[in-house]
Structures are given as C-alpha cells and as structure tokens.
Length: 304
View (cartoon, rainbow, N blue to C red):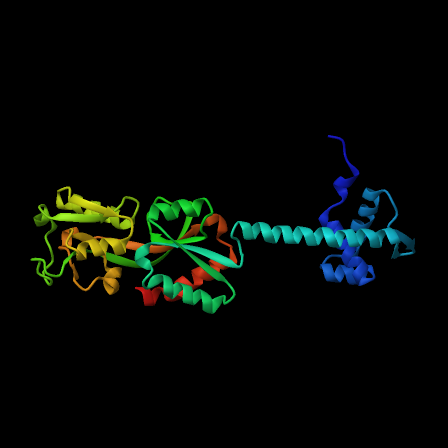
C-alpha cells in the first residue's frame, strides 16, 4: 500500500501541538508533557512534514506558530474532544463506568443481601443509579454474557471461566413443610422416608432447583413434583397453602409465611449453596464494578 501523508498525522502529535501553543515554548511544553524538548521539536517538525505546509517560522532555536498552526490546533481541540466524548459514550453503552449499574439477582436475595449491597453502593457512589434485574441463575448468566446486566448475585459453580466470582456467604438447604405437618420441627428429617410426599419446586435454571434434584438423588428416589414456579416467594406460598413440601435455602427464613417451617435435613442429605457476586473478567477494571466488589467484601460479615 502506498504511503499517505496523513499516516504521520497522529493524535499524539496533535496533542503536542496544542500543548506547545498553550505553553508558549519548547521547554514548558516538554515539562507539561513529561517528555524532552527534543521530542516535542521532533513531533512538531514531523507534523509539518506530514501536512506539507509551514506551521512555524524558525528563528534560531525558537519556533513561532503561524496562523495555520493556530487553525490546526483548534481543529485538534475539537477532534480530541470529540474522541474523548466518543470513548466516554461507548463505555457508557457497554456499561463501563456509566452513571448507572445494572445488578442481577436471585429472588431469594432481595430480602437482605440486595438491600445491604445497594445501600453500601449509595454510600460509596451517591450519584450512581442502581437498576435491579431478577431471574434464575441461568437467566442471569446469559444476561451477563450478552451485556444486559453488569453484575449478578447468584449461585457459584466451577464452570464459568469467563466470570469473576467473589463469594459472599454459604447457605444450607432445609426441608420446608406446613407448620401443622406431622414432621417434628426439632428432629432432622430422613428424606428417604418422604418418598410418598407431594413436592413443589422451582423451575430448572435455579441453583436451588439443582440442589433440590441432587438431594433427592442422594435420597434414592425421584420426588413427585406436582407444581413448579419461577420465583421462590411463590414457592413458599405453595407450601403455605398445603400444595406440597419443598427444599429451601436458609436465607429465606426471615420472609417465610407464618405457617411454613424449615426443618434440618439429616447429615447425609445436607448441601450448601455458595452465593457470590459475578461479573465478566473483561470488565474487571470497571470503576463501578470495583466499587461494588469493595462493598461486597465489606458486607461479607453481615451477610454470613
């Protein structure tokens, strides 16, 4: 490809021209740019050569800008300003350091975890607007990867190499039954003895559903699931209404309907979920996400 004169007109050289005109001489421009005066002179001379028109009158070692130099400096100011705004707006479209942050969450985390973190972000970045998006673990992973959300509070697993993960707390799975059921509240349940029970569950895609199926696999039978739902609050209401029993994480204890009881499982059935903050590794330097990460680390003790 033949060489073009404008190949040597770079943003760096245009920036040096602007600084030189503002500083008034090579020494002050070099000090402002933190480079040598020789480098400033070389950049300005190269810019003249690329433009093929004089930008300066040379009087000994002194450079006196012509009207053309002042005109080019004004063009450079507008060009560099447009570029800076373009970079800012592009990052905002991508969710990088914008004036809002979109946090995805499991429904079960909205009673304690989400408010704790949102208030922490308000204290750290008061001007930042927070948008909450609810869904299953599978939904949130997909939204993270397609850029619909910036971070997700969900169950952690080992099959997400593209995501950064900051664990927040671990949660035990419990048996959930109506308070008037025949199950003793203070006696760990042998799940294998519940094969004739009716059950309700979340739909596939939730970490609690995965724990539900794995626990029954350990118990040695496939549960009779009479109804499924897509949010944990509806699931608790189904148990409250006597539709069936289920397995629930301990974090919902504070928002249980009054006639639903959580009962410990026998040791062999016990499983734990790790709840964590997730975001794309490619955005690990995003200032908003770094702030959220700091809030999560500070809040760990309160959430455990």
